[in-house]
Structure formats: structure tokens, C-alpha cells
Length: 508
Image 1 (cartoon, rainbow, N blue to C red):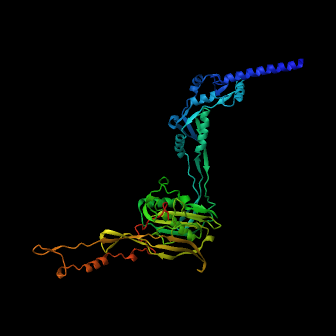
Image 2 (image 1 turned 135 degrees about the vertical axis):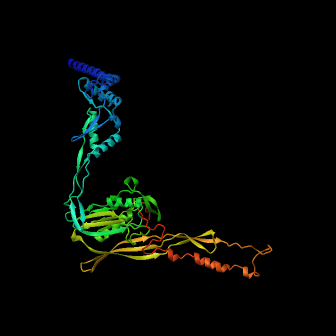
Image 3 (image 1 turned 180 degrees about the vertical axis):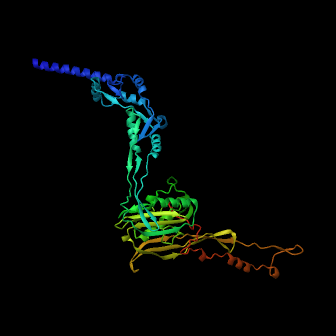
């Protein structure tokens, strides 16, 4: 019995102590003081009210000039210019919430730990305008970055020389910003730039077996408007200097990027729904078309190609390749066991595209096209009350439709045909011709005799009667539309959109 009483007494005492301890911890949680042994940076703000803690740390939370360094270079930035400062209010709130953010039992336990000397360390909360800070860092990186240079070919007088590659360096913006944020929270205002090495994608060794021209093609600009020329220059630059290893594919759209003003493209003539209008990027299809023909002569596999909805003026039907931002792309593949190298350039109104490779892959190739079907343009006639009856006038010129097959023919060294493959079938849809038909009636002429007596011409006045039939015949002969003269032939686009290029707006 005594033993049982002793156990009960012990339980009572322990329970009382536990209740007292828990009550003490609970009371501290509900107090307006920060938990003991709570530090902001190296400042102890424990057992202080929010206002007391704020007053104590305010002198510790002033950001000095932010400094970036790289080797012997130094850049200073005023924190106010980039929207960087310490958020004291948030920092004090974070300190006050120590031991108050969990459930009641865990909070009491944590609060008791603080009372027996367990420390809590907090960083100062930061307000950072990351966009402004990144913009400032980008300007600094311009003084540091060195563009890497791929190995490339230098072709002069038929000689192929390989220019060795050069590695570059680049500031890692995200890593540098992350390090700076961590340093600022620790009260450090100086940060080294994180700089990484940029390895070339094409090396001299990659090009060592590229020793001959596999295929080449040129087209001449008939439209040399500034916007179109600028777009063509840009497209040739972005699609040039590309090395394709065996099995790799070349996507024209991937290399040119979206045809937008942001990407550097200008306004020029484009085609929307078979009509020539002004749009961004006009001209890039002349480059894709020129490259397509060079690829055909080089013997590379055609993966994807589409023709324009209007025949082009700079190549025959069946030899064009249109592209657009909405899915139309020109794609080819290196089907050889050696790498091939794409080189394109624009000079004095001429677009030149060249495919270089190994002399073991050089082919003897000819390209031929056949017009499989021609359909006359449909004609729509509209009545025109302002045009004299019997006369016709073309309002919109039509365009015939064409179906054309393109073939690639391979020959051996003796000129004997060894293979003929159909590369593509091109369909150029017709455009309706609109003709105005006159419906205006000829008015009767009222005549007067010498004594001012009015009369109408009749059978008794043969000498004065106009020969209406003869006049109408002459007029009809002079104004009749010769439909044969409005049709397109195989080499000329007889349409207001002649010499116009289809690009990113192509919907046909």
C-alpha cells in the first residue's frame, strides 16, 4: 500500500511539474516577446518586443554599395538603382514567429528549448527587384563575355581551308544572382561573377574530312527593296556555318527563328491566301528555295518540303520551298557517313547556297521537272452598269493551276543513268479571274434641223443615221479580253503578285 501511495505521489508531482512547464511555455507563446536566444545576423533579439528588436537591428540592416568582381575588374552598383534593400518589418515578423509556427505542443517544446539556451539564427529578409538586378548584371557581362567561335571553312579560289575553333566565356547570370542573394542575407556586399567556359560546337577535327563541294545553287533577286534584302541577309547568316553529322537533320525554321521584328526581320512583300501583301519577314523563302536546290544537287535526303501557292519568279515550278511560322518547314537529312557543312551568303543581289562534304560522297546529279496538269483559271463575270454594253474589262487577273513533279536523276561517271527518284509533287492552285461586263445602254441622240425643229433619226434620214453595228463591232474588237494572254506560262507569273515571296503568312 505504501509503495502504491509513493507511485501515485510521484505521478502527481511529475504531472504538476509538466503542467507548470507546459503552462510556462504556453504563456511565453502568447506573450508579445520574441523567443529567447533568437538572433538576426549576429544580433540577439530574444526576449524583446517587435519595436525593441526593430530599434536594435536597424543600424545593422543598411546595404552598402554592391560590388561585383572578376579577375582585376570591379563594378559597383547602388542598391537603390536595382531595387535591393532589407525588409526590416518582415525580418522582425520572422523572428517573432520563431517557436510559434507549428502546432501547440511542438511550439511549447521549441519555446522551452530556447529558454535552456538553444539558439535560433535568422537572415535578414530581402526585397530584390530581380529584373533590374539582372539587367544591371547583363550590362556588366557584356564587358566579360567572349563569344565562342566554331571551326569553319574558308573557301578561296576553290581551296578549302579549316579555320580553328575558339572557346568563349560567359557570365552565368542565374548562378551569380543566387550567390549575391545569399551573401546579402549574410551581410556581405561583394560577389565574384560566376563565369563559365563555352566550348565550340564545331571543331577543326569535325571538319577534317570536308574537302569538296557536293552541291551549289544561286538565285537572283528581282525585288531588291530594303526590307526584303535585309531579311535575306539575315536568313543566309542564320542558316550558314552549320555542320551536320551523319544522320542529323537540318530544320530551316529552327535556324532562322520566328520571323518577327523582335528577331530582326523587316517588313516586305509576303503572301497571305494567294495574295501579295506587306508583312514581316518577306524574302526568307528565296533563301530556303535556293538551299533546297543546293541540297538536291548534293544528294541529301529531303525530309519535308512544300511549294508556294503562287509560282516563284526566281526558280521553275517544282523547284521552290516555302516556309512559315505556322508549321511549313524545309527539312533535310545528312544521309552520308561523313559530315556535311552548309554555307550560305548574299552578295550583290544574288543568294548562294553551298553544301560541302567528303569527296567520296560526291554525286553526278541532274534535276528535272514535268508539268503533269494545267487547268485554266476560272472566270467570274460581274455586271458593270458604268461600262457600255458589249464591252468587257479585266478587274482581277486570274492564274492557271499547275501540278508539277520533281525528279532527281543520278548518273555514273560515264554519264549513264543509274537511279531516278521522285522528290516532290507541287500543286499551285488557280486564282479566279474577275471580268466586268458592260450593261450600260447607248442613249438615242436628239437632232435638230436648221429651223430648230427637233426630230429623231428614222428611215427618211439615211445620210445622218449612225452605223451603230459597225461602231459596236469596232469597240468590241478593241476591248475583248484575250484569255490566252492572261494565263501563266511555265516561266512567268502573269499576276499582280509576280516576284512575291511566300513566308510566315503562307496558308496554302
